[in-house]
Length: 291
Image 1 (cartoon, rainbow, N blue to C red):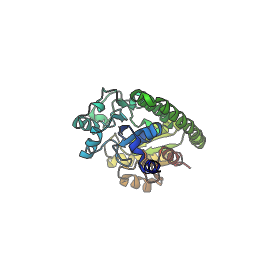
Image 2: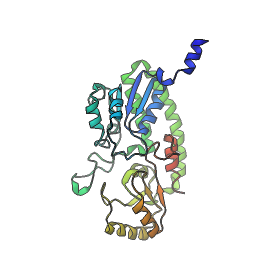
Image 3: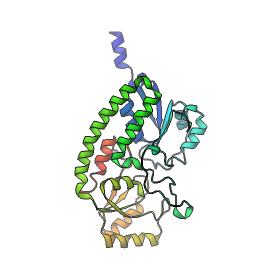
Image 4: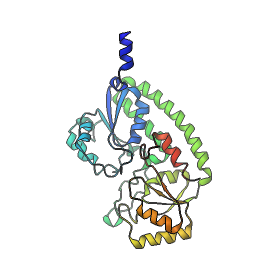
């Protein structure tokens, strides 16, 4: 009886035999689905933070130092903050060339790759747009990649990771069917963004981005650019301004009022908004934005 009570009261994390550090919440959600009780997932960034700029605080260094493996988004999304963490943590298991290190961007097709990279083009990502997880079809690719990664570093439980992946895929495919049906008549809908975070989501469902409040990535809008954008909206009649959760909406609110266009805040990750608690609710929200 005592042993049974001890098992019931023991946190599941104590059964985990690997600490997997991941850079963003969406990676944590996939990793937890595949690894379940065999891993303890440590997410470094919060979902409502700007994924480009995370402060490499000492608590994050400690988490990387104690990790058995590290999974990152890649495509230089973490370029400003994760390399310093890895260096200061001095953990051989999280080094870029370790077999316990995974860069997810190596396993998906990147879009928006610039032909040239210099400051005249703004803060460009040389490898392409790094927000590939916002195409829900890519979630299956990433889940398979993480399943194979976990199996490679924990062969003893590979059959469990295989089964968990199969279960995850089955349920995700059901959701993909629902989201495809919901978005079927939205193809060709024009929208404006603040920053091109949703490029992969737009591509998945045939939505058309006709302009951005940022004239170039990372460059704030000038008055001239803002006025030109209002004229574009009046001419092209896009459905809405899609805005991320981590930039100020001040300019977007001004444009919205002048051009009479809705402003919709769009989450980019699990936890970006209070109602977005998991991957399913993230895409439920995104696919419900256009009525």
